[in-house]
Image 1 (cartoon, rainbow, N blue to C red):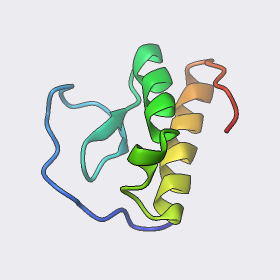
Image 2: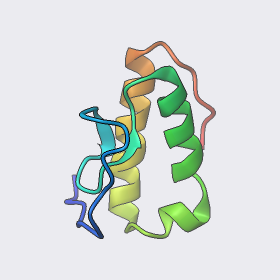
Image 3: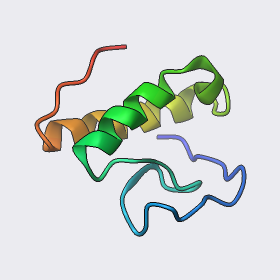
Length: 77
């Protein structure tokens, strides 16, 4: 897996939760709602463009793993 580079200081608005991008505290994956939102946001071209292709793959993998853990079905890419 690639190493996600820190782009800027992430906000702590969700508290100490698990993130698909833990470096920047982006895409929380601790609840059903957050997992669905994370998947939606990372699949927007402008959000994905902030990362290189390997990082997007890593983030999507983390979101998919969290979705499976929570019994959530998410749309395929």
